[in-house]
Amino acid sequence: MPRKFKVVWVLCCICVFVAFVYLSAKNRMQDIDVQRQGDIEEKERRVEENKKHQELKIQFEKLMGEVRELNTLGKYDQAAETASRAAGMNPKNAEAHTLWGFSLAKSGNMKGAYEKFDQSSRLDPNQTKNYYFWGLALLVEGKNEKAIDKFENALLLDPENSRAYASWGSALNNLKKYDEAIKKLEESLSHNPFNGPAYGVLVDAHFHKGQYQQAWEVVARARKNKIIIAEGSLKRLSEASPEPH
Image (cartoon, rainbow, N blue to C red):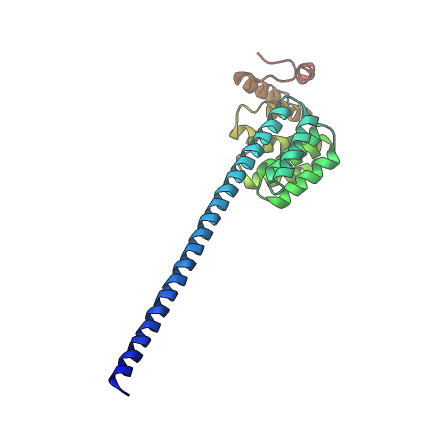
């Protein structure tokens, strides 16, 4: 091959190679630009989603706060309606169903309350408040054995829950298991000596056992902690055994 053609052939090869490199680089830059644009759009989408999530979270917490306030004010029908909205906004939130159940129970809809408590326990089986409220609803209906099961579940999760011990003691007192009731009520007061309801039931349990002196001792403990015992209980106790001085 003549030298002239060799030079031309080499130059052609170089041109092809340079063109190939150029086009490859150009395509690579285009791919990078597309990827960069995609990353920017994805970042913007995530920011927007996070913003919406935060807004929904704020709205949800606001509704939950309203539910608690309405329950405190005794407006249970309104509390139940608000709780249903909160649960609709966040269906997997166990506490929303618990508060909904509590509101329904207070408004007299026990069947609906039990459904919500059960649903809450399925969403989160480790929620003390749910078992406690569930037990209270059962206690109100006189289903003492079932109520005890719920209080026991609550205490397995929170062994120092004074209210659960007191409610358990109240259920035992209703079942006329006075010795067991006294034990649970004393456990309640050991965790919280200012648990008012526990004193009242404890006085009644001692009264039913004919332990009038012990009942008056409980009254004295209550008064020391500025806890008021129901007049009916005091009157009945006074008639059975005058208050010691």
